[in-house]
Length: 250
Image (cartoon, rainbow, N blue to C red; front, side):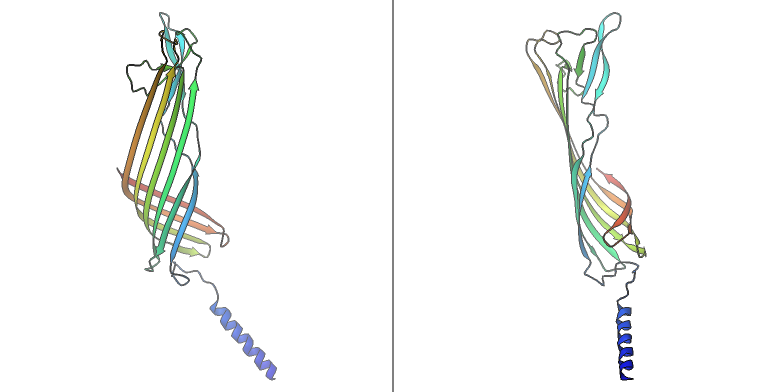
């Protein structure tokens, strides 16, 4: 009889402790497990592009009836080059109804190079290929060359300060609407090196080279708003989907 009473007490004690350890899904982050500080590091792999950025035009001599003219055949453009980037951030849950503050910095650098050349030519005949530089700054030079090298360099720095609230709608799904302040600045550098060898076209007696350097710097500040969602399959594996829209003045 004594053994039966002891076993009943032991089972009752275990059931009490088990009830206290049952996991629950809070509506928001309630800071019961830690102080609410967090950090993040994201590896990014992407590419940037700029429209209307042909670095050369390949032309060909054709007979117009009265004279031989250069007719555009191909526009030479940069290809797609992927480069790594990084996003780092720190944040804290403020303890007021589950709101959080999150500051993150995004950096990305993309660089592209390309070159084209055609056979040297003495004068323009039917079928003669000539490269034209559409960005030639020196107006005293005729914009026709037999070799053009181009480089496009782009850098972006971006800072976001977000105020959001993550809500758990089920044990495996949460959503976080947020608003933010955004600041961003970019640097774009576009350089071309064009050359024409001695004796090619218009009876030149020396080599002709042209160097063009075009730079654009942009900065802007504005607002950002969006919605983030996460589906958790396990504690270490989730699928996320984010949507945001920004408006910058610069």
